[in-house]
Structure formats: structure tokens, C-alpha cells
Amino acid sequence: MGLVKRITRSRAVQEALGFLVAGYLKLVQRTNRFVMEPADAYDRIEMPVIAAMWHGQHFMIHFAKRPQDRAASLVSRSGDGEFNAIALRHLGVRAIRGSGARGRDIRKKGGAQALRAMLRALSEGEMVVMTADIPKISRVCGLGIVTLAQLSGRPIVPVAVVTSRRIDFNSWDRASIGLPFGRGAIVLGEPVPVPRDADEQALERLRQSVERELDRVHERAYALVGSRDPGAKASPMLAGGSRA
Image 1 (cartoon, rainbow, N blue to C red):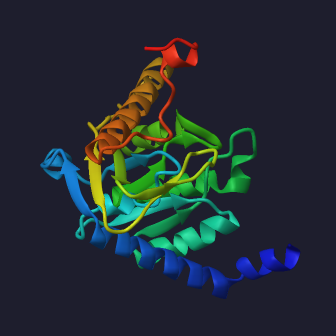
Image 2: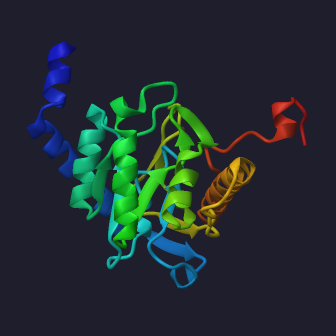
Image 3: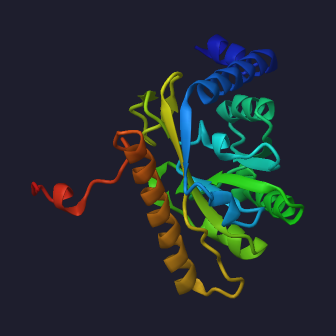
């Protein structure tokens, strides 16, 4: 297993993997018939924005980017993150390496350096794409993305991109990846601005707003392709054992 890990983590193999992943995603984008909602979504937002996504739903998020938009995406410093960064490069998205560090020294994860890089990107007109989840806790928005919005003065725009034909993984984040030759939906949520002078209570309310809007756009996107979000939170009634 050690040998296999060394091989898969080699630069040459990761370059090849990243190239293949990017090529596959381009095929998915070209062969699915996508609808965007709202149709005038980009007329209603002023770039650059912070595009928020749920972890596991990140593979196709770049489909929502217009060709003229410059974009950077936060990618972890892990070995898996390396080929993700390579794939993004082939898809025209710059990678910013680093991640959150729940319960750990943030410097070891590159979080502080990544935050500075994202602030610089936004100040230079580059859209920033990042997952909103707390690390390893699916579909729970953390304060990291809200803090970035507060410091940068740029709004958060929740985004969902789904396809009718896809593979749903039984992973902690209920990841999905699209398959070719189907239908797709791109849904952009209402922008969530975060005032620079927001206090702790206001930040918590805004964090909840981002979480609710991300859930809403994913529910809507899956509905548009005639499906249901496999990672959707259980309703309170079902969680309590009641039946509708």
C-alpha cells in the first residue's frame, strides 16, 4: 500500500489524473443540456463574488462560471487536493492552496495564508470559489466563508450544479459527479452581503442564511432535473420517526 500511495502521489501521476478528470468534466459539460435559474442571474450580481458550494457537490461547480470570469478556488493542501488543483488549472480556474483547521493549528493547514490570498484575489476582481462546510461535517456552514465576506466586502452567492445522470457516492459529504448525455441545472441563490461592522450575533444569523440558501438552491437544482438531493438534511418530522 505504501508503494501504491507513493506512485499515486507522484507528480507525473497526479498531472495525468488531473488532466483526465478535467477532460471528463468537459465531456459532461458539453453533453448535458443545462438550464440556469434565474435566467438573468448574472445581471443581478456584481462581480467579483464569493461562490459558495457544499463539499461533495464541487466537481461541476465551474460549469456556472462564464468564460470571461476570472476565478480562483480554495483547494486543500492534501495529496488528493494536488490533482484537484491540476484539474482546475486545465479548467481555467486558479487554485489557492489551504483549508480550515477545526481543532488544529491553522498555520499547519495554510488557512491564514489562504485567507490572505483569497482577499487579494477578490480585491483584484477575481471570483473566489470555496466550500462552505465545516471540515468533515457535511452541509453545516462554518464561519470561514462569512468571515471572508466580511473582510473583503464581497457578497456570498450560493451555487448548485447538478445533472440528471450521475454517480452518488456513499461518502461523508454524499458526493455526486455527473455523467454525460443527460440534463443539467445551474441554480444561483440570492447574494448574502456581510457588513464589515457585523457583530457576533449578526455573523451567526448570516451564517445560517448562507446554509439555508445553499440547501434551497440544491433542492431546486435537483428538482429541475427530476431528482432529489441525496445529501439533503432529513426533515424534522422524519428525523423524529413520524411519517407524513
